Length: 274
Length: 197
Image 1: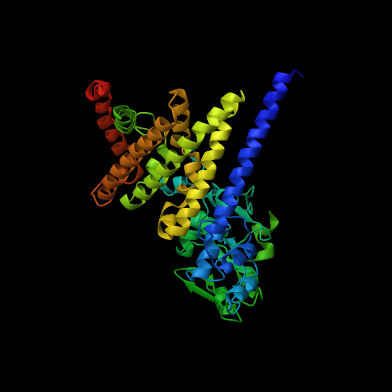
Image 2: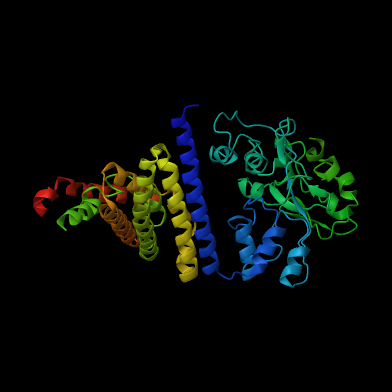
């Protein structure tokens, strides 16, 4: 290599080295001189949070939530992703109030096979868009539109679309952040305690005579489930059965009694098959 | 003396960084919702641009002597980044409220192209040390002037009965365009003749 180009390399390295060292030293001194006392608990809690900065808590990243928890404006259970909030509660010196783990459940079983269509929807692959177009293609105006807005909203890859046109939740991956709940224009998805396996897979509040023609697995409001439930955990309002998760004992009597096969235990749901 | 006045006035009005050179648009739109934060941002940018102009003048001298001018951009960015870090520390210490209000836009002064722009323009114009610093201060004052003017208008627009469709960013962009057209009027000024140069 000729001397000129070698000089250029040496000079370049030397200049940047000297500048970098001088500036680094200057900043180090300045940071010591201008240090601001911040609550050490913020750093401690930030270390306990997942660090994915998913924003599921509603704060700008994990640091934002940590600051809010220390400031008292967010609960110690503020992180929806974290499974055990006890360490954070310990840092804050309060009782651990770890909430029950919630997962998303899709309350509709009327896929392409079970539910009738009114027209063929060709348009933007988005449920809210389809909803505005005459209420969507599905004959049942309560059921899943099947265009997967919830699947797109899931930042954890916990949702997929089944061949039958219904979203499937992978409960192992679901963190209960609730983004899919917000994404669904028909409020079909709900957060449900993971331990409660039985759920009514229908949102249709019309009378049985109106439900039967549009969906083979819709709730007709026959009340067989509520009459037979030993724990009195099922209410039928507006022609629709609803399970109260706090009372449900997972006995699955209702699953056997339901004539439309609308109520299912989680293991037999489409979500587990997919 | 009139020479420095010429540099300052042309940097503020005629070659304004935002409306004539289109540099520093990001903070112009980002930190212009309140006059108070806009003023703080303007002061921070003025400080960084003045110091950066002064320091990069000497660094450019060194680079020319060593024949490594191709390292100009990276060394200038290094200087600017260090200055911004320093300003951030000072603001965090002296005014936590302003630190909160400026938020992400404070570290983003590093990537404010107006700052790198002024240092490069200084080199291209062959300014001496004092001229460089004056140009830095003038450019930053022009930037601050526009930022504060714009923030003042946006503060009033926030309470104006606007159609829903143009609330927020759309009306801000329209306003920015109108300000830009207004400043276009200065480009017809023969400043040199006015100052007798």
